[in-house]
Length: 240
Ligand SMILES: C[S@@+](CC[C@H](N)C(=O)[O-])C[C@H]1O[C@@H](n2cnc3c(N)ncnc32)[C@H](O)[C@@H]1O
Image 1 (cartoon, rainbow, N blue to C red):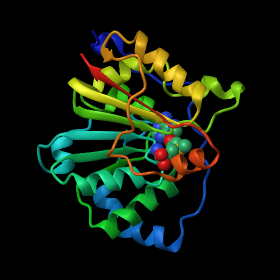
Image 2: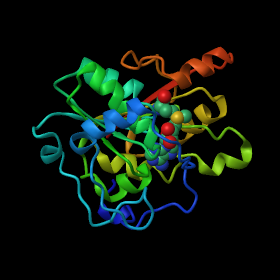
Image 3: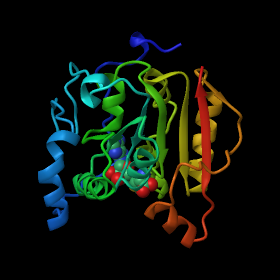
């Protein structure tokens, strides 16, 4: 079982799973940011860096979304292609995206505005820190991690997010019966994910690949993987 004692509240990784490239916003992104960021990008009190979170900060989904509804979260939501699609398809569910790449968050706001989506919030924060303290325990119906790996060179494998150390964090935020979904186009990361889930006592896992999750549109990253002839692997595990 996972409880507060098994998750270090000071959790942070010295090796993070991302590089923060600056990158300017396009005019359209800036415009969407100016219009929507106040209402849709969460104000996260920081600990040290601009992607950290004050360990005392607690997010209250009911306050943030203004209602009680099932909550689905995507880690590394990128340009928000999958997240906005899911939010538009499921207006009775709330969606939260964690992303450290600011232009990606701004692009998500552009698409959100275009789709007229309201049930979506974004937080610019390192997911590993957010899962350890910011999110309430058992608050999620689903946790999604789509194509988390820009780090296919072996020397970067230590930066991968989905490891044995990450499992207690995922277990902490998922409600019993909630689903952790993952997808990747890198075969050796898919195998790592499968091994990690097979060892995860807090999850029921078939030990095998899942069929492609119907709720995910083909994102830019998925399309790139397919174009390069890579096999897309989906995985799903259920919180005990
Ligand atoms: C390869 S992209 C995939 C984006 C998106 N999921 C998709 O399928 O199009 C991975 C994304 O995860 C983000 N990311 C990586 N580590 C993260 C972390 N620890 N917390 C939040 N976002 C992270 C990166 O900034 C990047 O945008």
